[in-house]
Image 1: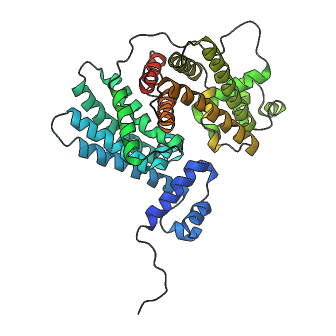
Image 2: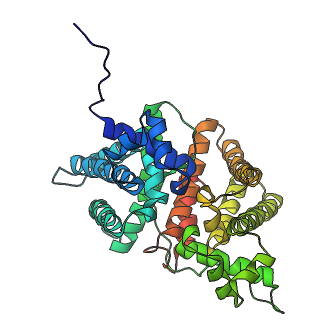
Image 3: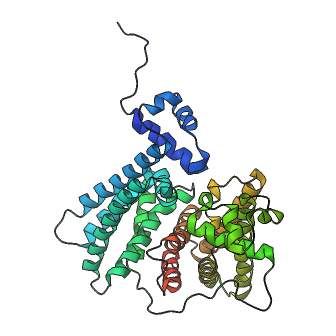
Length: 392
């Protein structure tokens, strides 16, 4: 005789983690509570605490599971004694497949790791570095002319190709999706990095006169947000950096969120102006794409504003402001996709969008990675990587 008593699923912990991962991805770490995770999984808050001590423990479990998946794929692919093309292809295909299947984890690993405890940050950092070291070793066996630091840069860029699936919802058939990502990563690993190169000029070069107090606050806030993250910067910190008392900041901006909104709006305006200039001065779509790459890298590396604008998900913006910023971002990406489709008519629009996001994510990730963003040739390297991914 059967009973109607429900049984707890044997994989309840993984179910909870999967629900949490999707919520973290959609709302940001600070926008999700324990009760939100429990409700999404169909359990109560106290039931969730039987598996996790707190929200931070949930995030750590999700991220460590993603690292374990990458370790498994890396070990499986590199089990052969000799690095050959088949081994590299097997590695890239395995990681691409895992990225397509677990897009939410790819997003969290890239953006939310700073919310972990120092111990978990160190653990994930150690294991991630070991994975990339394994990749770089194989790459240097295939390309002995590469310096270790250059091989590491290319491996980081390949990882960004896989992570790019987390910043959009475009999809194609899984087999084709995996093939496309693995092919883009393969392109990246074959890039000949430019030598030398001058640093990109500042977006706001110093001139005559003294910036207004509002401009000083925007500049200081952007740098503090870039360095420490939105939630670890106070209005008092911003005021001190600008040389005024914290309460005086409120005369110009009613909240930290309004500062972020102004910073993101300014970054979007810079990109829009640069796009107009590129389109007016380009003779064809391929040249325009190359010009967009150059202008994007110039804005990205010349000021912290664009990097700060990537982090609006964890900021309590007014819904109207959030929707408007997202619309502007999507319109900007759509211009790239349109140009790529025109330059390569045989390319389906969905695949073009995946490729554009991969190129932009490489630049965004590498510019934010501390161990890489001090490279003197990084702007030139970003341009080379992006243009290779775009096929221009």
